[in-house]
Image 1 (cartoon, rainbow, N blue to C red):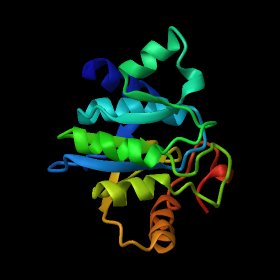
Image 2 (image 1 turned 135 degrees about the horizontal axis):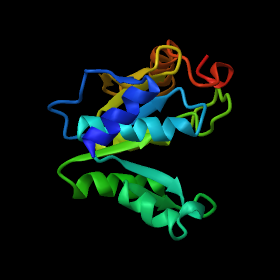
Image 3 (image 1 turned 60 degrees about the horizontal axis):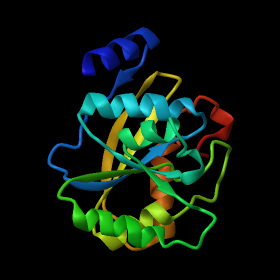
Image 4 (image 1 turned 45 degrees about the horizontal axis):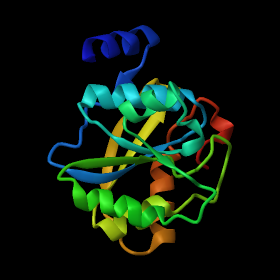
Length: 180
């Protein structure tokens, strides 16, 4: 599988950052800027290259056969966003039940520009006592991957400003929808 993914990335001109999360067993991963459905495809290929099997919370509307089977096979976890579920507690439970877990989030919560990020990823990291790994995708340079690890301070607003500062350096497929 790695050989095929390496070939696809090469043919498309994409490179994967050589930094990897070595020594990290559990973390919340935030990826940005998220401006296109292609982010998922390229990001998932990057995880294959890193040898990581991430978990991704995906709206349950997409879990119909055969797409749902595929999404589950690549780490998708169905979430009903219409119900008043406690997704934070569900995610923390997953962290507590696994020795190794990488859970991926796009904090913008949409592919359109959104200055008001969803904060669930942050609260999950704090409650599960795991770091946040900042990942990026830069369509301008066609490179993406792990940027840096971040330990939440408890000041959600300041921490999100810090993470936005890192992600704001990179250009999404549609830069006008990226992190400003």
